[in-house]
Image (cartoon, rainbow, N blue to C red; front, side, top):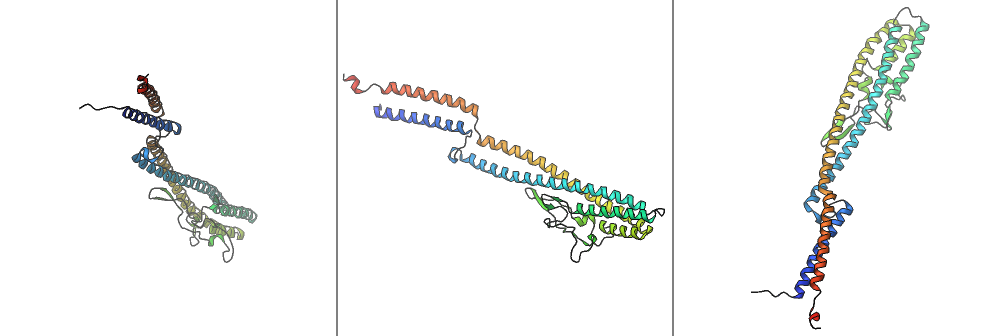
Length: 302
C-alpha cells in the first residue's frame, strides 16, 4: 500500500535533517574553538571518567615531583655542608700532628690553639646550617638551632640533636628520609670521638703543653672522620635514589599527559576536514530544501 506523503511530512523531515546537520556543525565548531573534544560530560561519558582519573594522577605526580625537587635541594645542601666540615677535619688533623711534636714551643702551641678555637666556631656554624630556614642537622626540630649554648649546656659536646627522621613522600606508598641527624655526623654526647669534645680536649692539651694529650686526639679525629665519610656516602646514595625517582616521575608525567591528550584534546586537522564537509552538506541541504519547498498549491491556482 502506497504511503501518502504530505507537504507537512516533507517539511518536518527536512527541518529535522537541517537541525541535525546544524547541531553537528555547532559541535565541531565548539571543539575547534576550545581545542577539546570533551567540553561537557555528555560529549563522552566514558572519556570523562578516564580524563578525571588522568587529572588526579597528574596532580599527585606533580606533588611527588615537587617533593623530590625539595629532597634533592636538601640533600645537595647537606652534601655541600659535609664537604665543608671535611675541610675543617683535614686542617684539624694537620694541627694535631704539628702540636704533638715535642719540638714546638708553647708559643707555637698557643698559636695552634687559637686556630683550633676558630675551627671549632666554624664547625658550630656548619652544624647550624640551614636550607629555606630549616636546620638540616636537627631532625624534625628543624625550626631550632641544634648547637647553641645556654642554661646547663656549657659545651657543644654536651648536645644531642633530634634524631627523628624527616621524611618526604616521593611516590605512591614511598616514604624517603632526607636528613642526617647531627649526632650521627658530629657525634653523640656520650662518644669519645664527638668532634666538639675532641676540639675541647685538643684546646686544653695545647694550652697546658700536653704533647701526649694532643697526640691522643689524632686517633679520635681519624675515628670521627671515618664516621663522617660514611654519612657523606649515605647522602650520596640517597641523592642517587631521588634522582632516579625524579627521572621515573618525569617519564610517568609524559605518559599520562599523552593519554590525557588523546582522551580530551581534539584532532584539529581531522576536525577541519569534517567541519568543511559538514558545512558543504548543510549548504547543499538548504539549497535542495528551498527548491523542494518552493512550489505550493497557490502556484498551480494562478
